[in-house]
Length: 110
Length: 119
Image 1 (tube, rainbow over the protein chains, first blue to last red):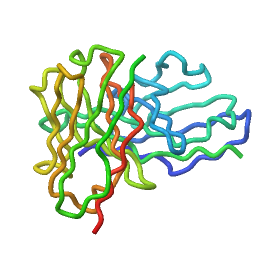
Image 2: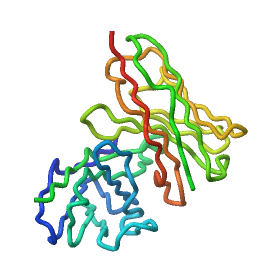
Image 3: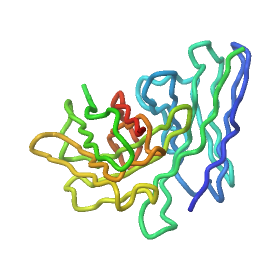
Image 4: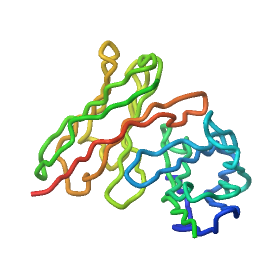
């Protein structure tokens, strides 16, 4: 089955740029979605199809995807961005469409 | 506005059963695939199952195949998850989520319901 690998944690100072990676075999050929989850809350979609933002998500959130790595970039990080972030793809390598989540990355704002 | 409200969670003994429900509102429920996703305490997200808009296509994660059954009632705008032969490792918050858009994102989530499997 397809595996997505994320770093367990990323730390960044307020106002700086955070980059959270999601590694997978030829992930550049897939459409990657990113979710933000704050403590005690349900996940929220922040980036879809590699780099698009749902309405209401700040422009500070952006994404890219190429080769074996997808990246979620958060510019001008704020304290309120502290959360767990998950990447997700649909994988068709088996006999059905499988849903795969990365293990999640805890973003700490210093 | 889109709302998804789960119910039915609770404490159950190993080997027991539980049925979760998800009440949907604010959108045309019968137009969308729906999914169950769970999160064990302190752990990441794990997809459990999804069902097509008509209910004709259903898939499960290997970890629950043969024990869990997803279903929907489009007339009642409701999604269900029948969970049998529960194990300690099924302990988690269970979220229902709408599968939206052409990119099949999980664009709306419920608040989750906690299932605890313990003797």
